Image (cartoon, rainbow, N blue to C red):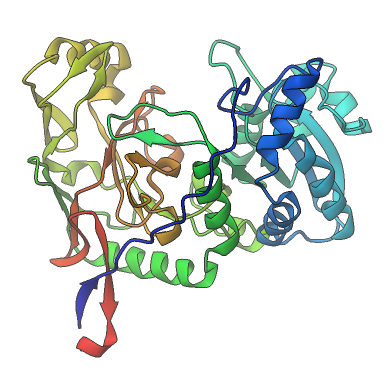
Length: 413
C-alpha cells in the first residue's frame, strides 16, 4: 500500500456578524441593553439546539450519573446553552447538579441547586463535593485566572487524576495566527467550529486516530519542515490520547492519563509525549514572541529530549530568558500532536490556525510540563508551537506531507 495526499477541506466563508462590544470569549455586561442585543446577534449564527444535542450525544450519559456544568463569569452568549444541556441531562436519567461559574458562583439564568449552593460556600468543601461528579462540561469562557489559587475546574482535574470521572472541554477559541498569537473569534471561526462539531464523521475520525496510534507503536517518528526542523523519537508504550470526541464512561474507563479523561470538542488530534531519551534533532521555529522579544530564525537542538543548543538570528536573549523563567520544563520536549480532522483544517484563503492545531495536517511540537500526558516532567511551563508545512513519517511511511494529511489507499496495495 502507499499513501496519497488528502486535499484539506475548504470551508465556506460566511458573512461576518458584528462583534462590537463583545470580548473574544463573548462576555458582556448584563445591564447594558444595547450590548445584550449585540451578543444576541452574534449568537444568532449558532444552532444552540444542535450544539447541545451533539454534546449530550458524545457524553452518552448513563442513568444516575452526576453532571455539572462549569461556565465563565459574567454571562455571555453561551448562557442559552445551559438550560438546554440541563434538560438533556434530566431526559437521559442522569442527575443534574446544576451550573456554576469557574469560581463556584451563580450562572445567569440558572436556578441554584443544592449542589451549586454548597459550592458557592467557598473552596473549603470543593474537593469532597466535586469528587462525586461523574461528568463535567467546561463551557466557553470558563478560563481561570492563574493568579487565583484555586477554581472549580482545577479541583475537578485533581478528581480526574485520581481516576474518577470525565470532563468535556467544550472550547470555542484557539484561533491562532501563524505568528503564534491568539486572535479574537469572529463569525467565520464560529462557522468553522460549529461545522466541525456537528458534521465530523466521528466513526471515521476514531478509525484514523486508531490507525495512527498503531503506527506510532511500531516505528520511529520523524518530523521535518522546509525551515530546518528534523527531529525524531520513539513512542513505545507511552500513552497516546486519541481526541475523537468520545466522552462516554466506557472510554474514560480505559484512560491512562489526565487528557484521556478531558475530551475535547471539537475533536481531532492524536497527542503523545514520547520516550524522552529517544528525542534527538532540531526544531526550527517560525517567527514568534519569546520572553517578550520578537525572535526570528530560532533553532533548538535536542539530545535525549533536552535542549542542548539555542540558535537565533534575532531575539536569542528572549528565548534564554523565557527558558530560565520556565525552569527545567522549558528546555524539555513535551509533546507531538497531529491534527486529523479535515473539518478543522486551515480554511482556504485565511492565515490563522483553527482550534489548537486539531485540523488535518497541522502539527504541534511542544515544550514543557508533560504530566497531563502521563510523563514525569513537572513545573507548569508549557509552550505550544504550530507547524503548517511539516512532513511526518512513522517507520518510514508518510502520514503528513508538507502540511497535508496523507491517506492510505487500499487501491494501491
